Image 1: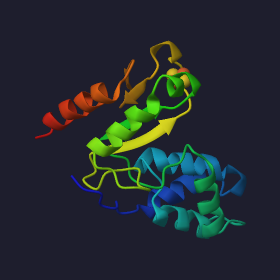
Image 2: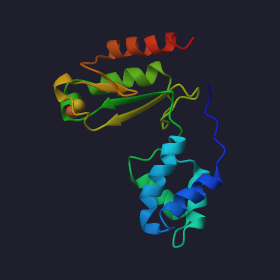
Image 3: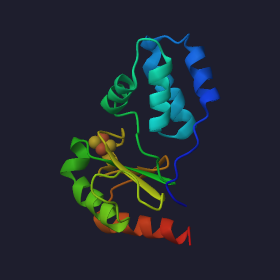
Image 4: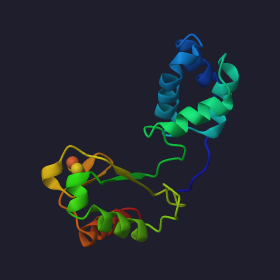
Length: 163
Ligand code: FES
């Protein structure tokens, strides 16, 4: 598994643009649709939309995409890890959990996804499970009361499932 860029289907992008009548005010909705397809926003797709929708430019689309946390500009890994760093989790030690995971999966500084495409790592502000703090979620499954050691065991288990 590796981080290869998908081929952009301009036909699909045209359909998305058309479904919003090419209205620039629906840019966020268009980008949400693109992200549903590719699981992130490929640069080519943003450039395409920026050049096709009247009143937009690729720079405008890129600006919007980078402003909203809901959009990812990098492909996500097979396992999407979200470590909560909301107040309840932070005071109970979410940072050591985050740092242990980052080290364990060998995530490079400034990157969200590992080079082998296996893991994505991000922080979120609250998972709505504060009584389970510090908590993390991997592909929708919640892992409660994490410690750095427990998080490493979880990652080891996922790695073993993929050998
Ligand atoms: S602050 Fe972490 S789950 Fe609410």
